[in-house]
Length: 401
Image (cartoon, rainbow, N blue to C red; front, side, top):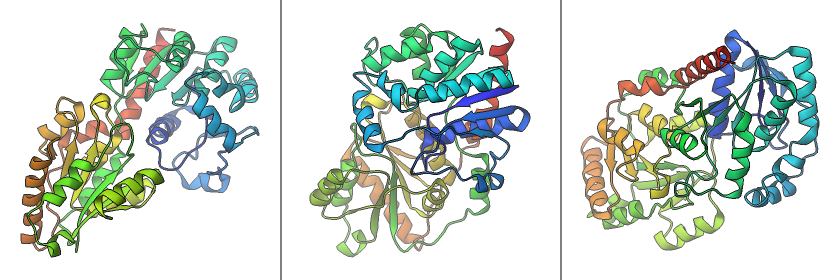
């Protein structure tokens, strides 16, 4: 197959959505002719000298010169929910579309693939498919109304619905999104392809596994602290622990993510510097941090219970126990509970009792990390399986075009 992939920016650092789409492209490029139409993000320059060292070296990359202004991008981000058309008018625009038309004339592509969010690449693909007749398949990692009650559409959701009307197929990351696309958007040819982890992680982690000494009882949370995500249950549970102060000092809570300064100040003031905020880190560094920790934390508010973040599979691959502060009925909670990977709770006292047992076991085992079993079914959630499923889906769609 000859494939034209469109995304709004090239390889931003440490974003799950980027890793998902790149895994598709890397796999597809092994047996297909793949072109990526993108542009240089000013903070993450595409370095052609590095391409040969990476697995996407056999992907042709087309990078047109376009105007980029970070202040404008932030402004558009705020306006997108009210006037979503603006997102594509200036930030990606006609220059990308015109280059896409020329590429389609020269290369006779079999299919166009895109990812969402943001909506810009979809706007371009929608028009490009209409002009050239090349089938278009869209991977929707999120929906702009996915956390609203069923049947509720905001302006971006309505705009998205108008754009994807001529797509030949849609993939999404969760069963909940698939149900909404079928029932609310009346879309056909929708398929769920879960998020996942690189298969290499499983082997690397298993090869380097074994209980490691750690002078501190490290609790790690990687992610955001907004839209209902809160560490309060964990931190209040630590405060309730019936431990001498010398033992409590060994408990370190580390947060990795892009956290607002105002949120950091709130936690610092309320919990007396109990949390160490360390910003964003590369995925390869996160893996090592996860492995050396004593406990990994997942936060999922009630309204986000349909989400299935790839972080859960990253956590599970390490064998480190998880504290899951999430709705009990969610896919994530069932995955953790069924595989006995840790505790799902929304109760401070229950959390505190469990933490106390875990901490005492850690002390009794001479500060060794007590790993749980890595579930065998995790292989179903690898990037390689994800990408293979996506390729087969494309092939099935094209057979019926």
